Amino acid sequence: MLNIVIGNQYNPYLNLAVENSLFRKEETDTVTMFLWKNQQTVVIGANQNPFTECNVDLLYSEGGRIARRGTGGGAVYHDLGNLNFSFVACKELYDVRKQLSVIQKALQHFGLDTKISGRNDITYEGRKFSGNAFSFSRTNGLHHGTILIKTDGERLQKYLKVNPAKLQKHGVQSVSSRIINLS
Image (cartoon, rainbow, N blue to C red; front, side, top):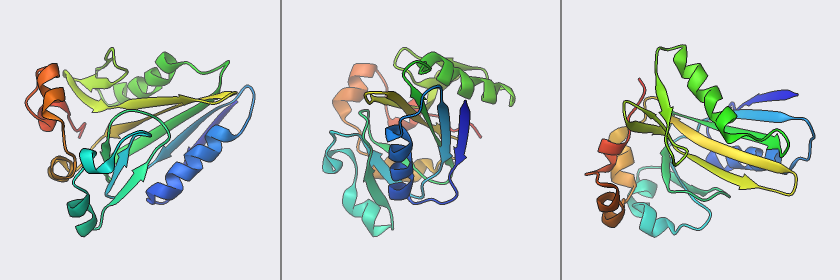
């Protein structure tokens, strides 16, 4: 069975709670896709320190929020130009490649030829527009990610702190050179 849930508000704490509730629900033979948006939020991974990942004071002073997700991965900026997706599937139906292909096939309808990188990111013209993270319970798998459609790149850059050593290791100059909005 396929369930589709579409969020109707922009509160990151509520959206992450909905996602967690879907993930913790034990259903067999079911895949659920949850589509949602957050307003002006930096979402950090399960083991990240917000003060090393983002400019906390600036974010808060401009009305932003910080939320922690239960999966690993890096800090990401969410705004209304960013669509978030979550796939929750019983372990028998969980398939990262198939789930990523759902995103790719949807974008093909807009003439966008995308690629899946070795790190489970989705790229367009060699630049990342979708980062993905994963978690598993006893019965389910969770795969969630972002799709940068029309994210405010200025805010993304000023809120997120990028470790220079990480950029040097991957041979890139800045966050903006690594990502792309699809619009």
